[in-house]
Length: 498
Image 1 (spheres, helix red, strand yellow):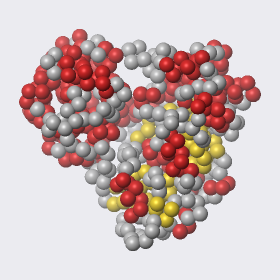
Image 2: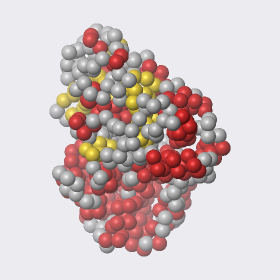
Image 3: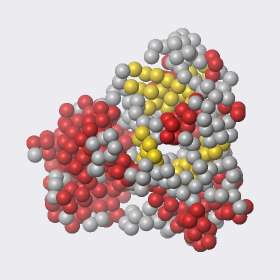
């Protein structure tokens, strides 16, 4: 894409200026003033706007789903900054697709409001209690569902949950607000909404049900039963690589003629697979490429094990070696080869095929997507929150490999690399900034593990009983010792040689 307005002032993104945007930029063909809301979405980050909001926008472009517009929401103080940016541009977003062969852009308008961020979440609760809101969806990160790391059940002891149980009408959490809204709907005779999780969790709908119902039960057992029996919590799998927005992305939007305070760049691939279980109706997403199936688990397992797991395979050693981007990882001779071997031999064998895609073909697809040089996705972003991502994305494949008696040496190396990364120092001596909600604890354990590798595996809230498996603990200990003594590249070389 060339600079259409080079030398001129970029056009401020707004409804009033849509008609004045460069001709090459697609924009809403529908009357945004005529839209009415049907969805409240909590957690309005880049992924939501580049994925779920885009699918709804596509329907609206066809004259459909005009009563399903999105109201944005958040419960964290830093959500207020996104609300301010979007409200100043009429809740429009510029999506910039970064394909290897070129760049294209479109403006989407499926969001029509963004609720204020406030203590007690009164406005959010009132909005979700309205009869026209039939879906409440969320992207609040994998680690945000109050899951007890040891039991995988609901963490009722978390201070925010204790607060919400004691103060159900003025909750702190998104889930407390949803429970309060459902309680209000029940009292006023309004049918419940569908709660749709869009985070990368296996069985994400089941996990959301566990969180909502368990929280409700702490203060109102009758309400909890009503929610459990009448609400729907469809499992779903979402997929699109959407980097964080920084100075480069802001400049890219201006280069194409748009002054957007919060543009979104994304790869030229999207996938959304959902169980067709909606208690209050849904948009006709199947008309714009969404797959509805009762086999969501197979799709999500393939994606979480190979894509999300693959992200950890490459980003962790890359952080140690100072490789800054995911495409840079794939260009790196050793890290790219590490991904290929681990994905082929230790991830794909434990994944079922899905309609139209074998595990081997999916590995090839992910290899191409990770290698896209136009997507500047940082290893730091991908390696963030390893204490949630490794148990969800890597350890299940290790357990399957142990059960099958197949190779686990590559994944043991990845876990050893994570332990080395969490020491906080790269091999060139530069500092790795805190990159996990539990960074300090991880760092202290990582430093102890330098001389005693099993200290890392003793974190039972992450590894469970894996420390007791001699094959895994031996492979892990050997890999970590090699990394510390000979370096990350040498450890990868030894694994690749078998």
